[in-house]
Length: 223
Image (cartoon, rainbow, N blue to C red; front, side, top):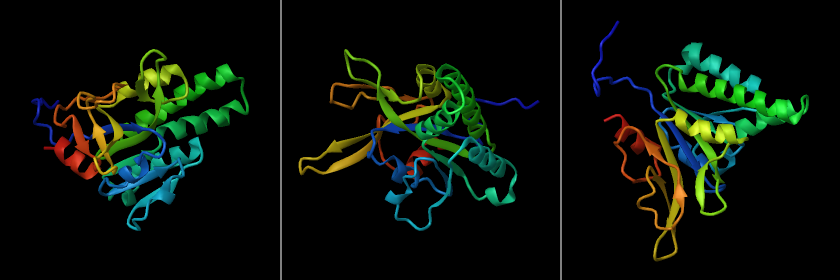
């Protein structure tokens, strides 16, 4: 038994959920994580030009379980500090499509939910590695614009964000010159577009609006 003090555990693995609209820059953002392995489900690596980025293509549940086994047990995986899933939404949809071909829709939704949560749990709990995933954005109310991470089915849409210590929204701010600059929001208090965005920072270490760079985000979280 090891007794710990709050703030004295230097080996806490980070888990971060980042969501944003299509084309907002989620894939390039994931590639800013140092010593990262990108789990490429969304096939978005065409937008990345850095030859140093390492990734593996994922097309099925079996592919993902093979990668998880590699990350847990292979000595070759020790060099990766950050595991970046691109994206959770596409993984969820991929699993559902494979199940829907063999089952009725209701059964496919139920099994997809269980499989997706199991994979998420395993990825989050690989010791010694941070887990970061991107996710599409969903509008959850017709009366006001209430945005949150997207998953296939209401249960996952509600449940998944609570599995992460940080839920960050990727939004662009337009300068007076018309240039769009992406920022990560851990709170929507500085967002002035009148919409509500689900965000969370359980660490209390992030500013309400941070530069869109995971290296600096992780550095701030591990201070």
